[in-house]
Length: 225
Image (cartoon, rainbow, N blue to C red):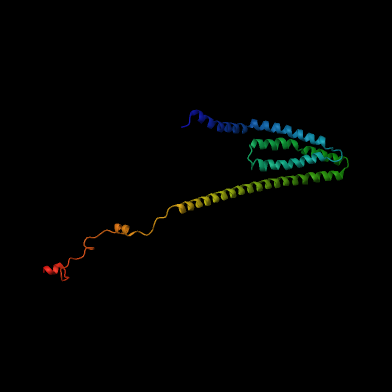
């Protein structure tokens, strides 16, 4: 019987896990995650805009929106539904990080600026690249999730096959061991001896004793008559 100390040590991790899940399910934790992820996403967008010049064509904004559409599909379709990370973490990454990282307002402002300056070709190219490019990026995110799910399924099938082969080898080894034990056991003589046969058969009175006869070979009952 376990002591109270061992019981408290066994239930401590479960209690801590339950408490952590309850804290992560609160609205305050979700707001904090969205706020922190939003700061990270906005900082990343600013760094990319500084690194990529946008004098003639807004490449930085286009790249940011393409990356955001790719990431957000993976976050919601893979990490939230397949990997099963906490929902608050997934919402924080999707709404906070990706939401602050991507920018529709910058896309609209830059498109209008190209149109006002007479850059009609650049305007058409930018709008087309953003609309169709973000769709292709989302499609690429879907393809990535499908590939990850396929690889996970193959790993699961490989583990099941390996387990089946191990069980089959164990059964064959047990069968070979049992055959070896049966072969090494001493064999008993299947034919019974005469003494054993006579010991098994009961003797019936009057069947094995010959009838008493007189000198003429007639039975004794006839002689008395």
